[in-house]
Amino acid sequence: MLRWWDGRQWTPALLPRQPSVEVPGPPPMGPPVAGPRPPGPRPTLPHHAGRNRHLGLIAILTRSVLLIIGAGLGGHALAVPLREFLGVAEALASGTTPVATELPVSALVQMMIALLLLVVSSVPLAFWTHRCATAGAALGIPAMFPPILSAVGWIVPALSVWLGYQGVLDSLPPRHPARRNVVVWWITDVVLSNLVVTVAVALALLGTAQLVVGLTVVAAVALATDVFGLRAARDIDDTHRAALNSVDHEVINSRKGVRQG
Image (cartoon, rainbow, N blue to C red; front, side, top):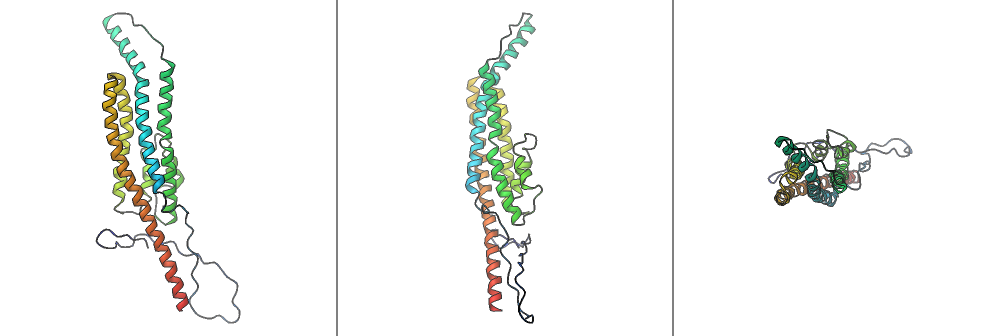
């Protein structure tokens, strides 16, 4: 059973441990003898269980940096067409003939790079989520979605607001106190993703000075996102290591019981 220390006492067991798998041996010689049966092998667990903290650190920090860079490139690229649109609207309102200009190729390239950065920023999170989710599933922690679906959810724009975060959340047992850090990271990361678009539009309409102020706000939100995200990565690893130690302890005790028997 999976338990943890909440600061005052050991919590009640919530999740059943995976049963041992008994490997049939050769038939015994002579009449059967009553006695304890030898323990089965340790349940099969992925080698990365409890070792995903550094990958989470890289994934969370990479996402924040790429989102801030994408905000600057996207805002600079949107400046040209939006100002052109405002100029045309002002000319029509004043009764003059608007002068149309072509969109520079550099602006299109910057737009494409900004969109690419938004997608690439989610790839490390997808790998980290898949590793955490597979480890949690092997340890018997219930999840709403399979690991591969939670990982792919980071890449799909419409699903990334929920599916990827749910996969990280389900890497922890139900009612585990560390799930709060995942929820806070969830909220701040969604705010950060939306601020990228807001800052880009503000730059396009107001100018470069506003970009500096906007990126400062984005950086502050990114810092809060990183703090809670790194806490979540640490808590997931600590929980999985405690579960692994519990499995080892149960196997050792069962083997001692067989020897004493």
